[in-house]
Length: 255
Image (cartoon, rainbow, N blue to C red; front, top):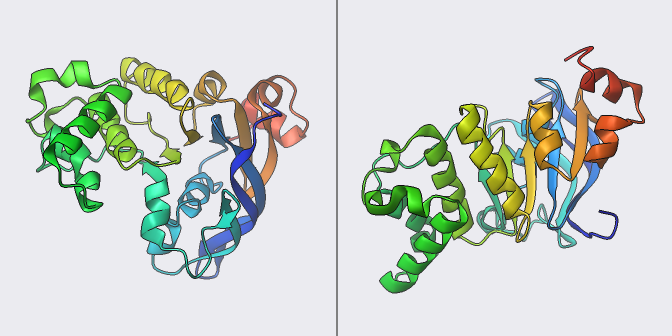
């Protein structure tokens, strides 16, 4: 993994809400075409960290961020950066599948394309089909493409949300506990999809499931009480962590 360049980099990133600091001085490079897992106990700042990576954190009242987040060496927090464009380049998939319930499967995936001004029906149809295929969903939905996205199973809904995120052609995909609401069969499909996605994207996954982190990721960062305790190749983090806190967390002694 050493020869991969960083696509997205945090430099001295701190964040919080009002007087409460949630993240403390995080510096971390996310490698291009790799899956990075962020692990750590509940409340350690994992979700806040990835919400800072595409400027979702700032939409919460009282939220603040200091430091820099660089996408291809450009600071996404510069005053001339449009957060809408940042979020298009750095897509987000949430913990609970959230398809637009009043929209069909087709329109869920097409929504972002239309927002971005793509009106040509042929182009939209091709892109919808392409991204449903990328999300391993096209064959499963088949003739149900015009039915409500909410009519799909939980795992299919989550893959629909991934297809929706992919449709606007992001460069980075953030996933916040994408399997926590899913059964083991649906989880296995999402994990297979995550591994496939790194061929074309930089993927960052927050997970409380350490076995999942070990299965899907190339690199792992361990957060504890808002600080980055250790970061490195997943195999090394799980088999020979350098920090005693990491070792204690991975072996189940706390958290």
